[in-house]
Image (cartoon, rainbow, N blue to C red; front, side, top):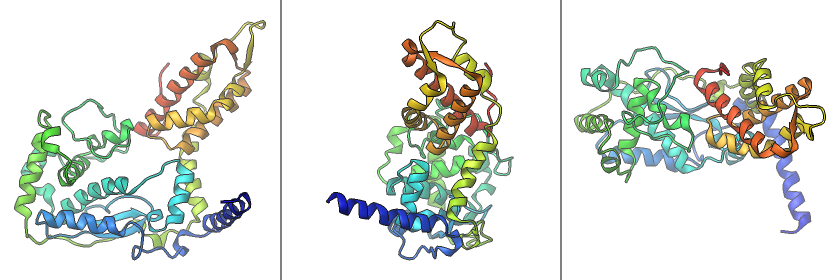
Length: 349
């Protein structure tokens, strides 16, 4: 492709991108019919049918993944309905999700839907295996990444997501169901020496009992259907950033002083904010890989660190750049994990 042609393509995309970002989500004309992920929906249906599960969940476009409370209908993030929106999602979050990722989430939500369709949580053995379905649901939880009492399904190399089954009994069931359902997952071999095998075998027995049985519930009220999303696409991503920004106030000064201790005047050094700005791209890439925080949020945190480092007049030795890079990466990764587990920053020093 010639340079002129490339510039033309880039300019055309910028125009489309601007128009999409400034359009209300409900006005984007999104629908599942003809969406690029329809083959994945059909695949989930085929996998359930192969096990004799009569119930086929319905799907709708929403602002995020999830089933409404005890309603066996699966909400799918709206951007999966349009390849252009998928591209914007990748630009905004730094994550390039693919059909394999989609199927992981879909099987998980399929577990919720089947649980709700058949009210499986009412089985005493379900409670004995997974816990009380109606216990309080915590957005913040303290997972044990080494526990073998839970399967590991939704995983992109990030600690928080690999431990999602530990969040609540309902999530534990959904994750276990997803592992059981995934073709060629090799769960009998992978989990043969894990206590989690008890849960997998229970799911298998349970699904055999459900073969050819009609569901008890197939519908219910939806949460945040795409037709109700009156914010613009730009506002949608802005709210994501605001969630982080609101929780990122006034917590960094003491941490920064530990990372960048006071130097003698004669020491060869550079301003700490210059060091952080130069290393921002590297830090965003590495920290987002090892935490569950979006790249956009990591960058905002680093920008805040730069701003406070400038205000505090911090400096770093030019001979210790590598050591400082490790310190900053460790600090921000710890903050990212803490934020995702608790919704705030309460690290002790």
